[in-house]
Length: 593
Image 1 (cartoon, helix red, strand yellow):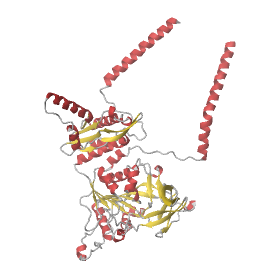
Image 2 (cartoon, helix red, strand yellow):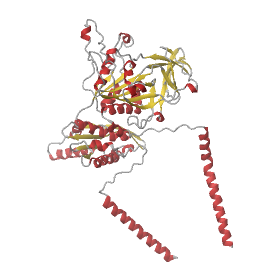
Image 3 (tube, one colour):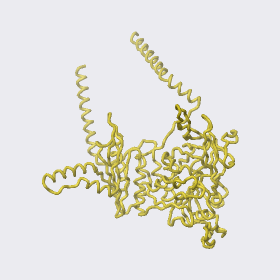
Image 4 (cartoon, one colour):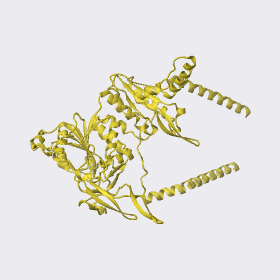
């Protein structure tokens, strides 16, 4: 027995040493070969998209990417793996480019410390000193600026100043910078890099038009905004597009503020009535082949506090008249009030007055309110087969309406259409009667509308509305001749091949919504990118990590879950115990026999 144990120990030690040696040898042999990574995540965030090779194949010369990052020792806890993840992504891009993309990693903090040491050394030697700010100033000129992040370690809370930026250099063109690379935005890093490479290759910033421009002060508005101009509802919207690398020109589509020239895409956020000449100008753009995004708000609402726990909803029609134009394109924006059982919540301020002694104090609190016009679009109602809406997790369709699609018009003009997202299976409409209380009670189940289109892409050659020669004039200003105001070109025949994206809600793209809802920002950029740049970039960005919510389960599902949680472990334990007991008895009987 002792010899057997010694032989086993010797064999085990020799085998372990041999396996260790083989592992070291294989690591030395294959260590210089990059075999890529296996991405087992549901969103495939770490796997390169097929579109990457299509874009990199367009490079005429090598492109250099420099990653300026502070060492992991100086990073906060949640940031320590960022450098490794970014370098792994750059390695994969280098492999996919087949030698057309190279990268380097540079730690500015280490260089600053090195310069500080050289400065002290030269002062001791009596030589001209080196300025410590040399590196920082040079990087600042490139657009690489350190930024502060929160750091919590043990019982210490501090703000650390770190570097984490990417600079892309291509030929003699202006360098492009991704100013802040953060762990929470790593899922979109591949898109951010490839979109900048795409624009560097094309050597031009895509130009788009945006309506409306800065708010105009009408006589009716002056009594409400005596202290200053009205707020710009789309300021953040324009900023999001500029950060994406677009040259955005805003316009009110007037004679003095006309549509910009040489634009690839026009965005119209309509929540007020347009005159006939403005509609003609939009129609002319479509006829010329300029891509169009139309988001119309046919109704808004006011939520009023009535009594504790009770809020009244009042309609505010916007008088949007885009249907006069879009009928020619095969769709309309429903002017009826649109409602859905699948709703979201908003916070409404409520004020109370309290008496404290001889003083009255006015207090404010926020109460959650939900109404059927505050529509939430869930993942199951979003078309994930399309690149524009793929991986969009959830949308807040604030006071939006449905689209009415004319299938006969689509067939007659050979237009193709694809729906991005719809309402739920429990939606309905109400007639709008101007400003006043709104009936939000749902109809009977058999009168419910099933999934109604809320956003659609229409492709083809569109017949212009203004093709009969009756061209509307610009509204004449006082003292202007009508003939001078009428300068227009008649639209004849079908227009150029074009694409139009229509959405029955413009509120979802206003600044307050974009700031709080990342899915709305992604949808906006997807729509603009798809029309302006093509689908390659959308297929890359659609890999962002999407939010997944646990679906509500019914009574049967709850009963099954509770039964499993309570009884599964005891039942398994009893069966195992019975099996072991019977086996032991059987073995005892065999020994007795």
